[in-house]
Image (cartoon, rainbow, N blue to C red):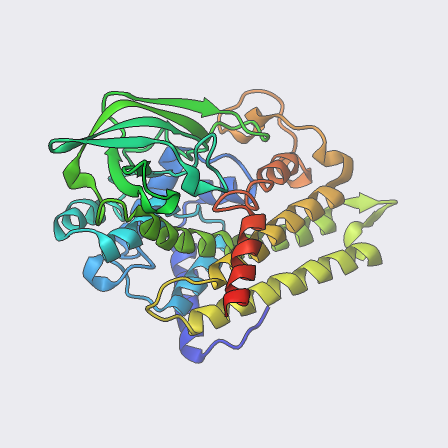
Length: 397
């Protein structure tokens, strides 16, 4: 795919490619390209390799320890990392709470928390969704009551990704139960080692337990850990979600999985011929490749026009298109692999498994990947909710 990048952009892209070729560990690349499950140490190891090179915070300004890259450079970096098979940089610290702290936190909070994110010294998780407050996040019921210089927090969060590894949670809590829903919410930074926190894993379709329920029972949180002003958390939450949704577009993942589709079509045979020779299969691949190209062009336009006003309705558009495209790619892989995608055990994706493991190049991991890709249209705000946001923006002009 060749898009209209400038010569400087292409030189930067080549620099990223050289770095990945020389520094991405072969075992991590293999696990990512084969859709194997990554553990916490895998994410931390890659993050620290990037940090040692000065690339630990690609989207951050220099004054906060970032690269100072332009949005277009950040896009190119994400694309090349995705194609090469690099583990994704965990977004909870870098892309979600990090930007919120830069914009709304006190100097003391910035000095305390921001330097420990690019180094992977602190692992963050997101305390937003609740059993009765997912798409309707403003109906959350987790309560924080002021008691001298602490808040006492009680409630439950759910679908909390990697809470079992997290050092800190950025958590939406209700501090004024009498105010209208959006007006009575605050954002707290909660130490996950605090007494009263219980993490319970949730097993998802593909067999993993990366998401969790988190119970908070009489958890004491210092008032110093309140971000910004009390009862203004809804503003900070929306700002954070704009950054999250833009990242869900996952163009690097789409480019990588498109390459996987093409390789799979060359390997899989029907009636003695590779599926890549089947005109119907080629048509399906061509259609999804055109959609990947269109998404990349849209991301280029958004990146080149980025301003300091933050993410707007564009983040909802990118979230919808990127998540649906990731699902289309996983479905096409399943279609091409055919019966070879049927046998699956989550244990096959874990390094060190002693039992029989099918050749991952012939579909063993595709069943898991297909199931995992059911999630992107749900997290970060369901696609149905994103369509409502877009419609409201159009109506209100």
